[in-house]
Length: 274
Image (cartoon, rainbow, N blue to C red):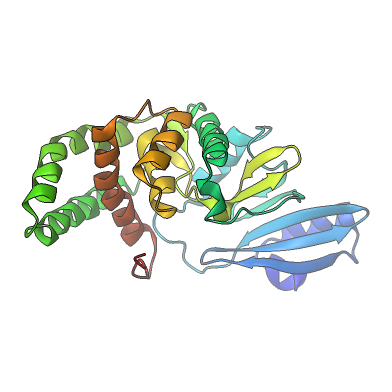
């Protein structure tokens, strides 16, 4: 299994052999759309190898950008301890902990903790990271909002509310275009580990610079947070006290972040309602 994982990464294979020994144990941890993660054990150590296996990475996944991101987060409390990173491969120390349940993260104290963790990511400035796929994302977003307005045509109250908030969307998107903060861009419970030393964010392949609001919105959307829960999370993430109008704006922006994945994923699946 290890040979299969490292066929494209001989330098990493040599590094692992030197660190863990030739007879190290290897087990598949996760089989994702872009990367596969393996647990490596040997010489008294437990490491995680995450290797790119997809022949073509989807838009938004750029190995050079990912390496820049891993350098930026190296040593950060919210990230795993990086031991080796190269183009398409990342080795970090295994984190003893639990992946939280998607429902459990709705508890107020957990929303505050995870929001603060995302804020720590956003505190890192990364003005030089490129956003090469942004034009495609923006075009998809505009189309999605137009479809949303069409779908709400029979509800004058909802339509009026969205039309009132729509002028605020452009500045929010421009903040993404001009944003200099590091954003995870895939923040949800499945990419978190709760360890004794604190929470850690995993899976940084979509990370880039951007809008802290949209990064935070994505978490709210993924976990179907109520307005009250969203307000707690957004405040902890550094997005302000989130008055009611901003919460409604967040719901509209959720359409935008949803559209982002129609661009980033090669074969997006329809989102399940409920």
